[in-house]
Length: 180
Image 1 (cartoon, rainbow, N blue to C red):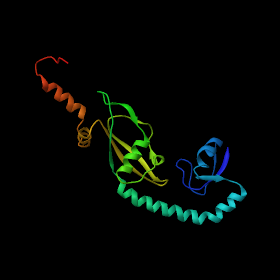
Image 2 (image 1 turned 90 degrees about the vertical axis):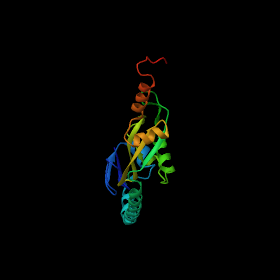
Image 3 (image 1 turned 180 degrees about the vertical axis):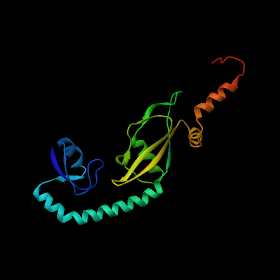
Image 4 (image 1 turned 30 degrees about the vertical axis):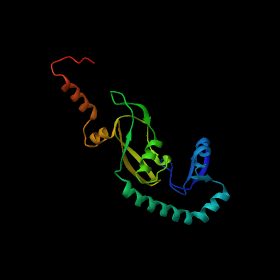
């Protein structure tokens, strides 16, 4: 285990300034390169204590900026057009990069590392996605995954486009077998 000083809040690990013990790989591959932590040596502890006030001020400024943006982004719906099969299963998946690009095209600059997606989206429909604008500020964005703009509008209105298509197929030839 490696001792680290957290330079910012890390979800499920701790708050800024806290001493934590983590596995070497997590420290080496994520926390240290992302500048979220520093090794807990005597020199680093002394340096951190001298810089603590400045780090806290910077953190508060970033948090307030993120809160202002969060008020504007909260509840945003982004439409993603994808090809899918008859059952609504996508022929690919919607990943964090796709959602980040859609949010950015809506007028809010978001990095793909800020998108929290438990698993890739592989079906049509409305999906809630978490966007972490700051380690302490998160918002929910809805990803409307559809096959067309019309399908996206129907999904947004609460109508399942696949059910609508099935109804249209039933109306084509009442009483006659389908010859397709």
